Image (tube, rainbow, N blue to C red; front, side, top):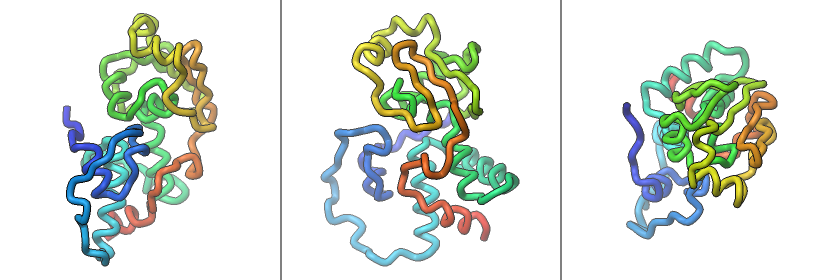
Length: 199
């Protein structure tokens, strides 16, 4: 299975995003402090940068990202917003958003290893799309692991957005509603991605 293994701090600096958006509060890089001296970027470079930013933050590769775009373009409403909402509904992202895992990469691995259930059934597909009413929970046999015991005792790694109702005590979360564009707090100009794919 293909996955993104790029160094986080270095890639965040290149894309102009904070490592905190990835769940890494303490990562920084001092490498090449005066890098990217060229100030003016072409229109294509700006569009490509936005696409690379979304792909890197959510850990998606090109083929899958293209499929999300095509699906979003067939949905009613604005394609850019639809695209971000589709990606936000991925199970690995939802697990990260609940605060049960510290980063999206950590959440992806936990889902792959079958530590989470959706509506009582184990789901080990990170790209599984959740829907309103779904209940995501840590599997019973996984609750005794040091990782999830720490979450119960010390609290979640982050605060859940309003569209997810999280109960840290029982290690469960419920999708209260579909995420809206306002719930996605990443600095993304999705219209540039649409322009790139529309060429």
